[in-house]
Length: 116
Image (cartoon, rainbow, N blue to C red; front, side):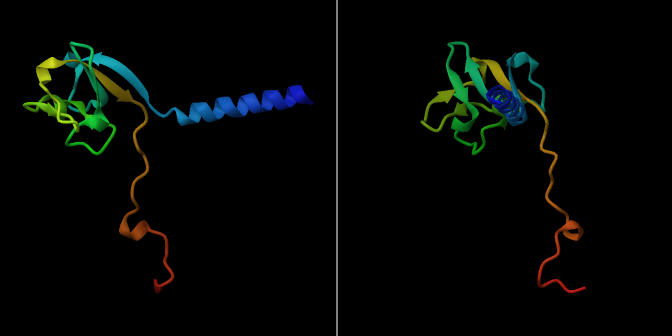
């Protein structure tokens, strides 16, 4: 019985871990960045890691890499400034996009005060 519980628990944990891993992060050269590349961070030639969430003009953890790189400079929330020429690698986020959309006006759920 204990072995069966252990197998069932292991199966549930593996399934949950697989479901939670929605995206994959890949380290790519800055030369491979396309206009639609989403990035979680950047790495400079000196090895410094710049997280997308720490960018001054970003409130998100994932940003458009091409938009960040085409700027004159990259400012961090702590005031540190980097130049796009210093970026060697981009931590690209790959994975399923958000397929859920906000409902349109005629698709929304009926409310109590709606009349037919």
